[in-house]
Image (tube, rainbow, N blue to C red; front, side, top):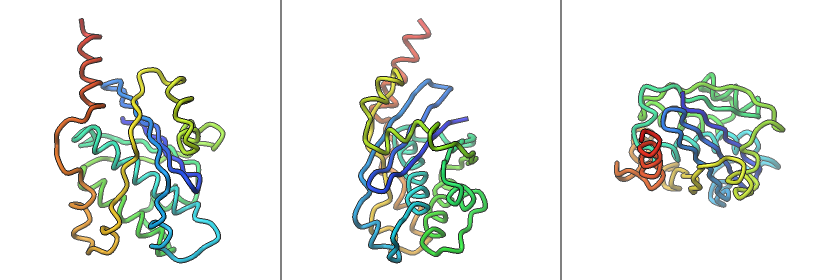
Length: 193
């Protein structure tokens, strides 16, 4: 399986991903875009929505960095928010804004032909917490051979498009191998020697 930890901390979204087959590790951070808050109903907090956005962003980031790597593979998402975890597991939320994020996640999973799995991890054990606080330097020190990338999020225009257009708007523009994928391939060749 491909292992992913995603976390949000309001102002920031973070993720750590590990592919045991290639040994590639990705660490990503991104400031939560302002437009995101304007898309949904006004609230005092957006914890569940941001957690769901972080999971979607993690999958989009992996799809961009390792095109095709999620096809027919189990992708284990470790999440520390039980509300987000439950919604992603069942594919539904009674809250319209969270339901929209969950729908976007499952459309992307279907497009990638991945097999998403969700597990709970306590916040204090979630290493992605460092990424969500933009402490990527510490993560890169603790996780040798990790590559830092920017987390990919759906473009703002996608949210106003019809659902049948979403998969095309979330897909990376090309299937060229990313710098991270080329780096992992070089490392794998060196290990084989």
